[in-house]
Length: 311
Image (cartoon, rainbow, N blue to C red; front, side, top):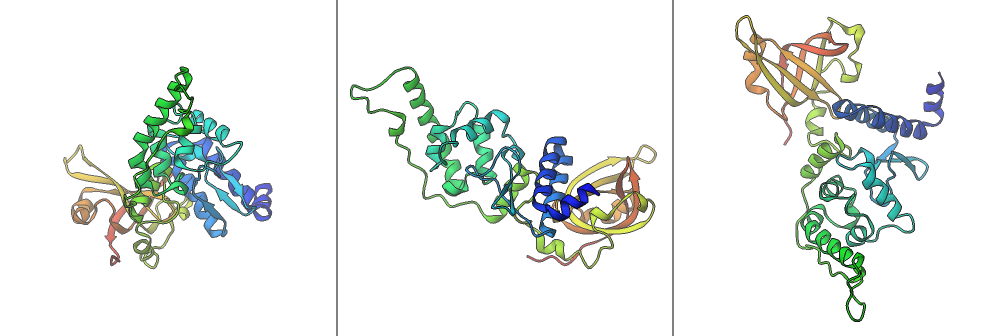
């Protein structure tokens, strides 16, 4: 009742705290699915979830403009506590003005190449230019700034003292075309764990809505051994051979536009019937019996259909 009251009267604060708690409390696919589910709930509540931003994001999820939620830096893959600390400390006096300014003011030992690449691909540095340009310029920019910082630290200076690190000449690769929308969404999936701003097959996934009986979040313990139809995009395929007959069967993971997922189990006869249309990124509707495997629902598939694809 207390959490229900808080969600009803303070939805932005409640959802911000919920996503922070899920980010801290779980890891791996479970964490991504929990946050994806929370983001989907924010959409239902008409709460805007903003992508990560190097000048606006805190370590955790935070409230912005009283009604929006900003993605936290700690939820980006490969961005650790040391990197976040130097970023927040460096921008305490004033925001970062450019990519070069960012590289000069943070500790590049903490914000290493892997971390910087993750920040760029996740969109946290979009205010400084397109991602392809920043990635192409990253190595030269950090190398020059690191060298200048080292010289300054060792007391090497010119006769006139004009080689301060602010004088490092950085030329960004301005003529590089940015990544496509689909490529940026793929980066979201890789570095945030789910699609935040859009889904590359959102239109095709919507075609499943008139064919299914249950959204994935509605599959629960009380549905054990009941029939259900669910729709989603194929994320993973694991094939095995049965001990008794050495026949091939498969475990297939599908996810919806909210980032929620369910496992489909194909026994040999059913797998032989449908295996040619089951491949990564295929949008399918699976019909079968719900089985509570290890307290998590799976579908024992009896039939597969594919909605007409939209290009």
